[in-house]
Image 1 (cartoon, one colour):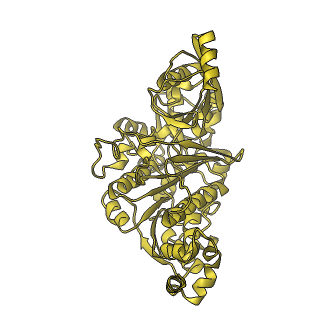
Image 2 (image 1 turned 30 degrees about the vertical axis):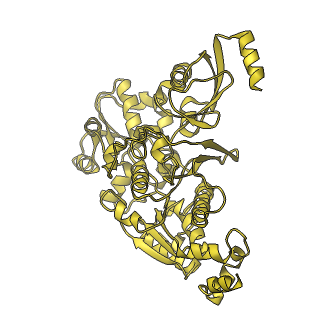
Image 3 (image 1 turned 120 degrees about the vertical axis):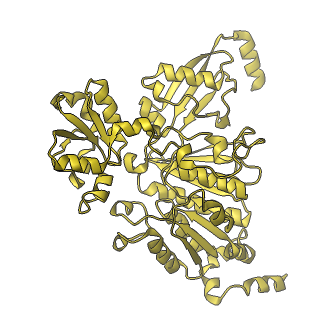
Length: 97
Length: 386
């Protein structure tokens, strides 16, 4: 699989990547959708993806600047670099009990 | 071998052997595991939505000592999900009602009651007396407090939380595992995450999440299977989908990282911004002041921004109902020459309403601090609360 990806990326060498962004609980309510596809620059980081998301969806600015983010179902730090086809998820903390 | 088994079984009475027979039949439990469960001490923070099923299943499982921390009183609006309490318990302390129910579920369980709000002054002492902490609290300050106290005392923290149709569960602060702060470094601003009393919660959901917490506690006691250490379970009850995220320890975590800055418990109310800021106070009116103003017949316009069903439960005489979602469209109905007081259930939506009105040019607007709930408790005790 990775050989194929490597081959594919060296052939295409795309200048932008596409990342699927999923929003949970209150975040989905704020922006009115639970899934957004983001077009990002190559080598964009998690923090940059969040910044693009906050600008590109209605009421996106109401999302926190540094939310908890998972990339491909793994908790990620803000500096992690994204690849084409990655899925990122923004999770709000829940307090209810 | 059979001698060992016999001596293990001798710790149980005949009726306990029958009671726990379905556990004793499991290879992962058996007499050895059941003895461990009986020797275990588990602390439950909160006897509410999560605490109800967690406490009842842990008691039924035969956990030897269950500690319960709660300071609240059973309210009619709790019963939709807090199944440890019954209709006849409304008005009783939750601790009293829950302990009574647990003793009925399993008289072999010792219930230790802590009728207090867990805070920085008592958390270390209370938690130190237990092996595992199950968090069923309903607010951020308590969650950060429980996390930090568990990290500092070295106790695993069985986490669960719910909102509307979504739930989360994990096991934090276990050896080599991440803690709650590795995931959520800082609490969100209060407006971003409404509580269940503002946003609602489907009653079955805390039943599912609280049961998962009880299960994780049992597995930690047995040291069997794979616990949620290093994983966050996400439950979407509306679609009934379970997902999980892999978690990792944050080396820069302020409490469990390599260079922790939190070495003792802090002021969690201040940390979470739960105390009203000076700026917020200037925008609010207390129930006491409002009562005086209404008594002196001053020219106030009371705008209740709750939903119709809440209005049917209770209302302040003289208020007008404009649900928050309709405020923008119905603003013209409001007399801009009067001083306006916005109010809601707990004083959160009314602050949003205040922002909307001020942005639209209404200059004299204040929000009722604590909402109609505070009004009912302090000014009009015959009023229904929910």
